[in-house]
Amino acid sequence: MHIPFDNSYAKLPPQMFTAQLPTPVKAPQMIAANADLAALLGIDPADLDTPEAAQVFAGNHIPDGATPLAQVYAGHQFGNWNPQLGDGRAVMLGEVVSTDGIRRDIQLKGSGPTPYSRGGDGRAWLGPVMREYLVSEAMHAMGVPTTRALAAVTTGEPVLREEVLPGAVIARVAQSHIRVGTFQFFASRGDLAALQALTDHVIARHYPAADGPAALLDQVIARYAALIAKWMGLGFIHGVMNTDNVSVAGETIDYGPCAFMDGFHPDSVFSAIDQLGRYAYSNQPGIGGWNMAQFATALIPLMPDRDAAIKDFTAAVHGMQEQYEAEWLKVFAAKLGIADPTQDDRALVADLLDLMAKDGADFTNTFANLGHADARDQFLNRADFDAWEERWSKRKSGDAAAIMAQANPRIVPRNHRVEEVITAGRNGDYGPFHALLAAVTTPFAPLTDKTAAFARAPTKDEQVTRTFCGT
Ligand code: AMP
Ligand code: MG
Image (cartoon, rainbow, N blue to C red; front, side, top):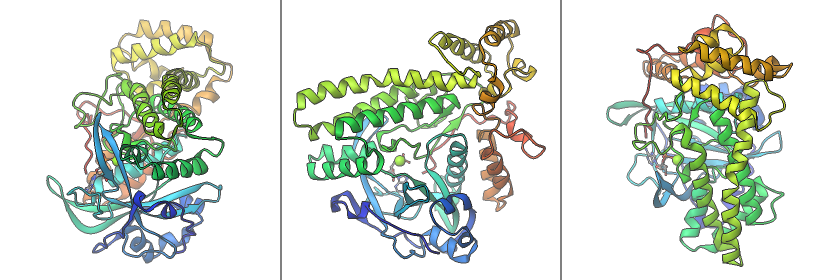
């Protein structure tokens, strides 16, 4: 398999990573590969069908030009400072400049221990690998900046969690895996040389128009505000918005106990480890601001005038709220088929969300069916919904249906479906996984006999209300 590597992170100061080979596994078997993404990366999709592919994506065979390494970082986990994190179960093979001109990392996750494993086994089990594959590709198909899934393999080795589970590796692709926590690591150690080199690298790679840390901060805030607004518009809950899981390239990264809501409630939390609801649906924008405050803090040491920088960066971080609200209005106005939103439309959106929350209306299906009887069926209080619909019908644009068709997915990877395909996968049947993957990667297409079941909300018995990191 030829991968046209062009590695730049490996040339940065040595304290920023550790050269680290993946640990080979017993019997790798390919369960999924992404031909479109391979082509984007300059990999011949035909190479994905060779026996070598499983060896490469399991980490058994290192392709020419790779410089495998584990990146170091730190981070705030649930608000608590952790000075030492890093790729504990992942290695980056290297980077390619894709056919669209964008540089991207290829990383293996679940590839064995590294110096940053902190006692962990460095492995992943099949469940989280399948979940990340499905959710990241669904997010991409819905137009959300995200890491992507290039391949998934089973390792033929058991992984010990609370039970014995099948091991797996996911090959994922990102514009980079550099995190807010990467900046925090060097800032907290006073390693200004590395902090400067990292900043220069990120600006050159992701924000070439930025002329220094202040502009970098502004642009990361803008991307992150837009990203969180997109999550909100899909009823998506990331679940672990720790600063080590915040990509400075503005992509959704590190899918763990994430979930798409079925019935809407703004306080929804799925992650079993988020007992205080820090990362609940409606807290995501505020936590986003908190995370940007940590990023700003990490950039301060690079600024010649510390006091002035604190003042400017504080203002930049506070400005995120307004940017987020503008992005939120754009996202939700499109969901209502409003082409030219004004401040007055905020109430129209908020009032619908209130009605949805009161009745636990299905998030995806309410929006997907607005304007049809099926939406009304989501509500117990139909009179209030009818009144809202009348306000809406006066406000929506002439081409509302076309706008809404591109803004309201019919199919998202619902929890109960994800769990179902993981269970089948554990039994060696990947058919359900591929059927769900096909459905969630064509989220705006009209439903067919094959996909209609994936649009259906779970019954009470089918509902999955808890998700796990699975690490
Ligand atoms: P996460 O919350 O999944 O982003 O992971 C937080 C940290 O724990 C990261 O530094 C991971 O590399 C590390 N980690 C998670 N699971 C494992 C594992 N099974 N073995 C080693 N390190 C792990
Ligand atoms: Mg992480």
